Image 1 (cartoon, each protein chain N blue to C red):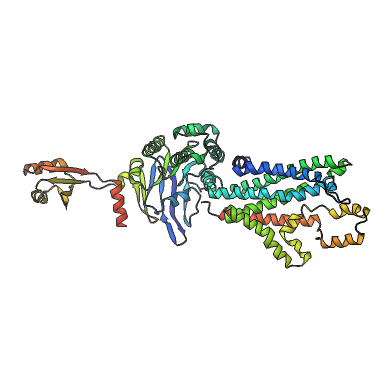
Image 2 (spheres, rainbow over the protein chains, first blue to last red):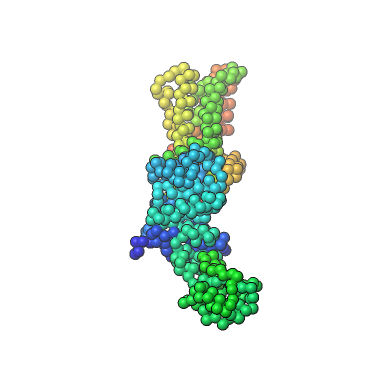
Length: 299
Length: 276
């Protein structure tokens, strides 16, 4: 038994009628990871998190929190935000958070801290129904942080937030992770996941395509995009260049992959020796987005 | 348990319809009972006053109160359906409440409403009885006070039935209409198809009879005969047209069986129903 494992699923499957939501999904999340579940809409992200937080029962397979059988008490140790936050509309923010504190058997003295963290302290006596969508989302995040839980489960945490709010939430998540907290989050915004997560799992139509550290998922050669005034001359030079592993012509440029032991500087020097001056040289680093799209397309 | 009660209390006490309907319930409860005796009824031989005197006042107020208390059934249906429409059952489960605890919360709410009715009834009975009774001794005052327990059981059953309908339909209008349809249409129609002596085995009948109507015939009998309006034979024939009473023990037993079934079904639905 690995004591570092916070959350684990084994062959988890769930269907809604004839629709398969997730199929044979096995995940492992370890302490301190920011684990992103990535996938297009309908890929099974929310279903996976709903099973993890006990609001949906799996058809088959199993999962555990902290290496033990999950029950409602294990959920008290987890801060969760699944889909849109649901609070009592006629209660104030403080009253709503008091209810959560009572459920989680916490003192009320953490309420002010979390409201300040999400910048809702000044609205603490407002009714929930008077908040904007972004404010509701921030209240959901504050509820998840109540009691400073070791693990947070966040489903689309930046939903409905303005750009400033997105940056704030992203910073909040990163700061929680720096304090050693484990975060399991689902998102379909690839740039968000890439900026925040240390590990990812990619789902498509309920199937797990790949999981691992972000670094290992986006492994592989990066590409260069080059162009010059005379594309024909450039093409001839590139074809005979020994640094190039792969070459593809675009309408007004060339996309190429270099050999492992070669660099863009060497390529530039080689072309300069042939009296070719590059008008464009762009280094395309491989992104999670490109890898995600490739995996989704291949599947 | 204390935690669950506190959570349910804070949700309930701040709920808009509760803030409106509970004060109205109290107001009309008191007004209803204290206004009627002041209405002059022009029958020399018939007065409603004995109904407000000990010990008949216990029967009368719990009997009439049964109608007022349907307001509480409406409230508990609204409170239960509200949890589904706001998706707050899901919310509470995510943060660590078990489905069993969600069930216990609503049982506690129904029990609290029933207890509130007991308190309200007790106060009304005492005020009314002390004002209108000519003869007051502890034996006369508390002779039929046991009926408060029967009233508690009756209200608890109707409130839990309201919760069950709310869980089934998840919609206030559908749940209220179904509850009303069951009590006013469905069961009476079925009951009319069976023999009169077997009609006691229908829930609306045996639960309603937990707080039986006052024995008006006997209360007014002396006055009627004094006034020489009706002969004893005529009174007997009127009595035969009314439903016969069943022993209270049998009534309570049937009610407890019915309550157990409601609780089992409600618990089962809480376990199986999707919370989102």
